[in-house]
Image 1 (tube, rainbow, N blue to C red):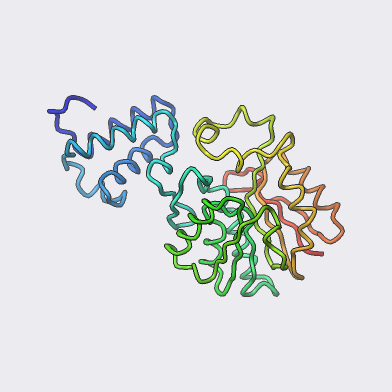
Image 2: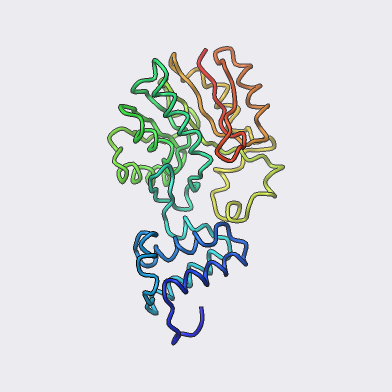
Length: 291
């Protein structure tokens, strides 16, 4: 970023950093530059453009330079800033949890709309299995009036973070967090079973982007040769945990569409299995109803 005597304004920092990150093949280089600088200056991203000619102090430049160097090595910007945006909300994130992604918003949007328009799903009881940051559970509690949510995870660190996110987003009184694997912590039946479980199959692992593969928790991503190590038991035992009416909504890999649909259709107490596409057109969310 040039010599220490050089004046580096917000405009100059953003322009240089966006170009640098683009040359390093970092996703969304301009947005990444904005998020990192807003974090260092402790302002909203939009406020950067209110004073583009503001000079940065030496301390600000040093802190920014460190983050930019790490981002150039494909360390996720969300981990560098400790914040991620999901469904118009802000979530704290650490390397203990997956970074919330737009693809998962498709699952959340489906459940919200189904609860609003379908008889029997008013003020539903929802379970989010493997909650991570809590983004699914908290978004549903926030946007479905009267919903109560049970969120489970095997990681105590994830549960602690998710509790803090529920508090920050004003739904701590309607989300209960429990420790346990798969259905261990869910003895009761619910209206909605939701999950974004590990689902990357071994044959796709080498193609996973380095910012994901090298930094996000592997145990929350990989799921065996066919990617169904978690999805298979979730689907096979889903009917035992669904009320009537009840519905499951599980995130999947696009390559698993036929396999998970077949698996759901083999369950005598599930019906109407189908897979919804996300905003990018990828097959992403398995839906099935309690028969």
